Figure 1 (cartoon, rainbow, N blue to C red):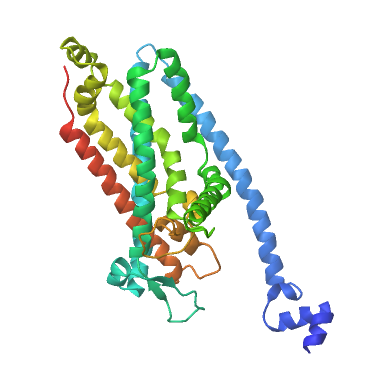
Figure 2: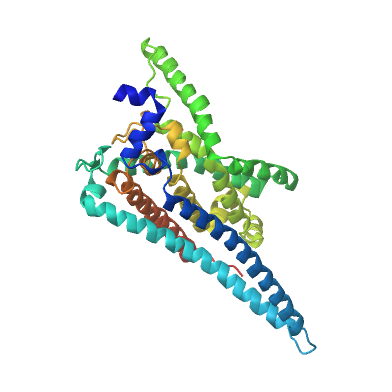
Length: 383
């Protein structure tokens, strides 16, 4: 029977029809009637939509013509319309954020109904088992390895981005000529417009192999054994490339904050005999420090949410270790991994992505709120 079905299309069609697959056999009369009604309703609905749109346009034009009169105060009406338009735009932004949070919370609640919250937030093993439908074997969903990898890679990235970006901002704000600043600042900010996938390929093709080969050369010079101790996919690779990506953010934000320091403070310091470097160190940077700290915290939240660079440069290994030369992964990478594949959407292996997402959202939200708090608390009020 199997051979006959495999070689005879008619037999296959008949067999599928016996199993209840409707399209495998001849269409039933009710199916033809439903298709005809659907086609007729589609034509009618398109015609009705055209008539309704035309009627609304005519009614609007008629109302506008009737409203034009010498006593009609167009300025007040326009201002009222603009006010409602701005209110609608701001409401859309707020409601969209609330909707995103509520959707993630609802799906995360379904995950926590199957997996205890303590096992998720305090678990040290990430090993989701992609079991079949109906299986009770969920695996382990420990957040700690992913959270440590996220913070570790973000720390390395900030160690690269903060010194370079801050020094570049100080140079452009205090030392560079207006002509050089007008050229250097846009060129530096071009890095912010490069897609992160390009940085990921740069890490995968250039930075990772370079660090691997460089470590092999160092090992050969020291021990005579040319064995690389830095993996091509590692925390160091991802941190360096992510730090390069964050340089324009740190530089641009810090430059704007430093230039906002009043000129009178600089002139007063220089008038008292301080050098330019002393003025920067003793006057400008302390005055701009709250804003710089807030900018760095916002940059850190940007680093925590990065995905593509980590996928290509740090790998997907969820582990707890402190060696920056070994691969680790982050929360965002596992969100992508859990949502790709053929698993049921209601399975814990898929729903865990929403638990990870709401956790990452809370972390970045806390960082941004703390940054705003620091800026507002320690901001100097200049007259």
